[in-house]
Image 1 (spheres, one colour):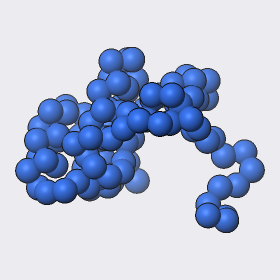
Image 2 (tube, one colour):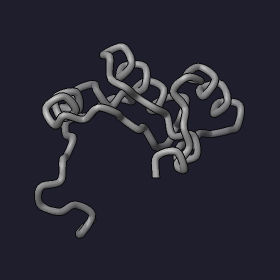
Image 3 (cartoon, rainbow, N blue to C red):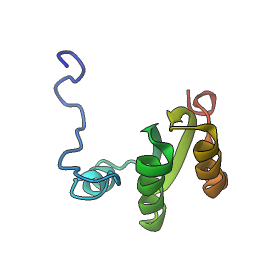
Image 4 (cartoon, rainbow, N blue to C red):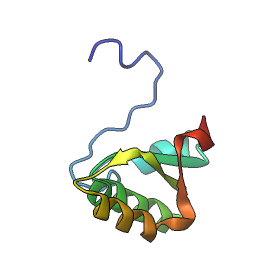
Length: 96
């Protein structure tokens, strides 16, 4: 979408799986840019978000699932995923 990115923005490329780390340069971007905390938002909380969160935490990256900026097919899947990461859950108010 035109205007979505501007020159100098950090872009992650190469992702081809539910987990945003798989096949992408995400880890290199995080470490190379001095990013200390990763806030994860998006769709299919129980799939893409959960897989990306798990990998971030396994790699020692300070990651948080932003609960009100994620969504999935039903409330049970959302609840189940948030429960799994209960120590690393925030809402948008905590980061704005």
